[in-house]
Amino acid sequence: MTSLEMRSNPLFMRNSFKTSGKWDIPIINKQDISLENVRLIAYSDTKHNDIPENIACGVHFFIDDYRFTGIYNNPEKTLRKLSQYAFLCTPDYSTYSDMDYWRQLESVAHSRWVGAYWQRKGLIVIPTVSWSDAKSYGFCFDGIEKGSIVAVGMIGCKHSKISFLHGYNAMLERVEPSAIICLGNPFAEMQGNIIAVDYINSRKVAR
Image (cartoon, rainbow, N blue to C red; front, side, top):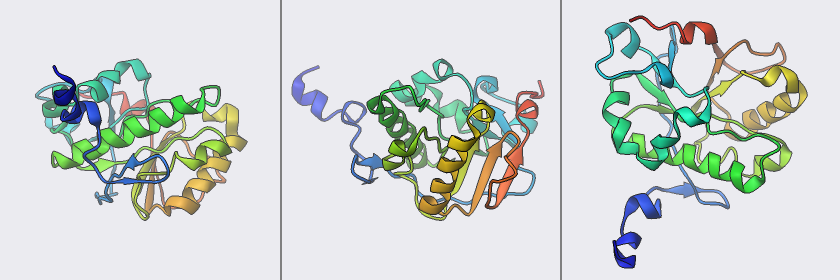
């Protein structure tokens, strides 16, 4: 491939979506879903030609990053399989506090880009939100329209409750979400229209 061809390759340039914020993070447009009986299935439990009970679920990515790194690198490969499901939460690429900020920024940008790509392909997308410390607030909420439904995960947050709640409250102020799909048990202090989904049940899929 020539240099000119590379510059016209959308999967190299990644610049075909509207963006927001200082770092030009791709925007995921606000979409609504029914919030009655929200059910989720882990991406690692999805499969081609899934059964109706499972495809009525949304797909979450609150699993180890290595299980879904290929989605950003080759998004077309999983498109047909994922298009079966009711909606998709965007990939939860890690934003650990001991990561350098360029890596955290990369994780957020990759997640939003994948979500924007899925929306362009006609799928229903709920942005997953994650953060580390106050410095990450400068980019971790970019690319999400105000009033959107968002998803957050509670896995591993019990050991950093104060830090999590600071970020959660910053998210409420910045995004003003209409609802928060919360995988795992929310803290009592968490405000907002929280839709709690049991993590264990999300891994008990019918086969």
